[in-house]
Each structure stands twice: as structure tokens, then as C-alpha cells.
Image (cartoon, rainbow, N blue to C red; front, side, top):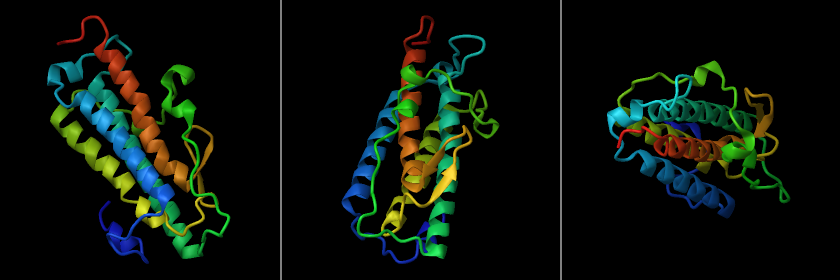
Length: 197
């Protein structure tokens, strides 16, 4: 995220993260590695191939993830600014992590989801650009993690467009859960009959 080191006052780059935030950072790194690995050698023809007339291609899935990551990063930054401005500090008993939302991460248990228009993908984008933007948008989310230290993560909340509310920790963790969900979708596309090899 541009200007993140000036946005998050009170921390010096390189300061160690508290254990819960270090674990969150590791989990998100693993999520990105899994999704990036699935498309690392994908050709443009494969990225543009659709398993059906009303289905997304792998490239469209990636673009949707990029757009969603950007939204997650914006919300997290807004909540952090609010917390710093209003002095929403964690107390000695403040919860520091939450279980990953299984219904988001596991596409089989939730089925298709109606997504907001602002994260509707564009077909036919270059796969090399999408790979770069995936890493960049994921990095915008993870760049917010150091600023969580000392904030009351549960008190800082914002509604998700699908009708549920997430706290600050969950707005960051949902990026990885969402990447895992769409990794499963890409794996199904790749396994579909007719997928270009």
C-alpha cells in the first residue's frame, strides 16, 4: 500500500509482530503462494478458456480476486485510521485472532455467491498482468498487518457487501480465505473436459 509507513504511526519498519499477527501473516503468505502457484505457468489461451457460457475463466477468477483484495485493503486501512484517530486500543484481555470463516474459504459448502458489481471481472486481461496484480493487491492487504498491533481489533468493524459484519482482523484474513475459495474454483476449471493443456 502506497504510503503505508507514514499512515501507520507508532511503528518502525522491522519491528517484530505480536504472535497472532505473525501467524496471520504466515497464513496469508501461504494462501498467496498456493493461488499464484496454480496459475504460474498458465498460458493466455488457458486463462481465457471458459468451462461454460455463463462461467468465469481462470483469468476472470484471478481478476475478481485482485479487485476483492483491493477492496479488503481499502476497508482495513479505513478501520486502522479510525482506530488510530479514536484511540481504539486493545486492553489486556482483548482477543487477537479469530478462526477463519469456513463458509468463505470452502466453496463446496457455500456454493456460488452473488458478488458486488465492483468486483465483477473483465474478460481477456493478460495473464502476466493478472499474476503481477494478484501479488500487488495481496501485498496491499498484508501491508496493513503491522498497524494492527495495539488496536482493539474486534471493536473496529465494517459491514461486508454481502450483508454480514467483519471486524478488522477478519477484513484482512478474508483476503486469504477468499483466495483459497477461488483457488478451488480454478482447480475445477483446469480439471474440466476441454481445458487447453
